[in-house]
Amino acid sequence: MEFAAVVAFTLLLGALIALVAVAVRKQKVETGTQEEQAADTVAADEPKPPITKKPKPEKQRTRKDKAQHSFSHPLVASTLKSHSGNVTSIDFSSNGKYLASCADDRTVRIWSVKDFMDREHKCLRANVDLDHATLVSFSPDSRAFITWIFNADTIRIFKMIKKEDGSFIFKAAPEDFPQKHKGSILNIGIAETGKFIMSASSDTSIHIWDLKGEILASINTNQITNSYAAISPCGRFVASCGFTPDVKVWEVCFLKSGEFKEVTRAFDLKGHSAGVHAFAFSNDSHRMVSVSKDGTWKLWNTNVEYKKQQDPYLLLTVSCSSSEGSLAALSPDGRVVAISDGCDVAMYDATTGRLEEELRGVHAGDITGLRFDVNGRFLVCSGDKAIRVFHNAPGYRAAIKDMQEMLRRAQNEAMKQRLQQQIRDAQRALDTVLAAPTD
Ligand SMILES: *[C@@H]1O[C@H](CO)[C@@H](O)[C@H](O)[C@H]1NC(C)=O
Ligand SMILES: *[C@@H]1O[C@H](CO)[C@@H](O)[C@H](O)[C@H]1NC(C)=O
Image (cartoon, rainbow, N blue to C red):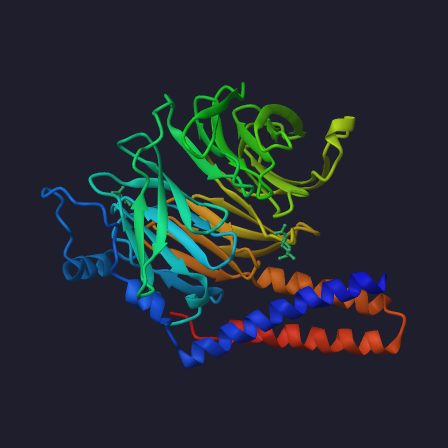
């Protein structure tokens, strides 16, 4: 074992443990930030037409509580419940601080990740007047988000503007994007590079846009119908899947000057024997997971030189239950795979394929969003009015297992002691989060 690798790894784990310790301490102290409290009730500052009825918060709350689907599990870290309609999409900001959610209650809500372990979950609210957002995706600077607006049938950008008193207002861009999709929309996204926006519909069309709403390129996926499409977290690739048994991946190329150049075929994931429901990338795009109608999920190594005709290779095939609308998520470090099937979620160790956790009946309806946070501490999902936040215990366990393996191979005494200490710390951190009271 290379010393440098061990140091890098232990640093990373140290950071993870520190995060957990902070979260646990915070839960005891219960300090809410001024900023978020002040901004709690701030809505979009667009002038509202008189016919817009603002819902009465008090009434809504009692009605909502009655309709709450009950679910409990030892891994639940918290349940975020302010939406009065079904949550249809969730997205973490890349700085790791926020979770955005949108629902058919005409609001987009921004949650603070550092509050997840607190009893109270404050959120900021952006209103979508006379319409609602069905998809939401954060911009790379975490200061704006894009939405798919249901009736307007197009993309709308919202900016988060911080006022002098520390509160936020949300301002919709003066113009929506032009309507270009004929089929039902599957997903939208903004590249982490900030260079393009993607929108994909089930009729096999994907549009690549600049940030002003001009189409740079359009792709026909030729997959008969599409079930899912997404931009890779590195912002370089766009991928899609659907009726055909492959996942197709394109590279969106820009010139050095920053100008758009072209969209080219990068590589395919070939190996499933039936249509593919969904896929996900690891944060560095070196791994992908796909879930198919053939009754399996597959993990792929996509860190290949596809320009030299190298194909991605299959690392693992694991049987799982899935159905139309199933989603996949891969923890940022690639250690844990999560697959949804209806209102259930299963978590697997990505190295061994072992089923680690089964979360059944998490929501009243089918899971609409499934994401790990950027630090891999939490798995979050939506499927009714509430958002469930789970501790990524399989991720902690896999990290501990990796350290134990390192310990087994460690040559010198100092390193052994250090690893032993870190294993104890990690185990204690895991025990602490699991012992923390949940709501
Ligand atoms: C990916 O996640 C790992 C583990 O959380 C982190 O160390 C790394 O910096 C992340 N990389 C990128 C490109 O975000
Ligand atoms: C919200 O989800 C629940 C559970 O799936 C469903 O019964 C209900 O009809 C949905 N409400 C709307 C307005 O779609």
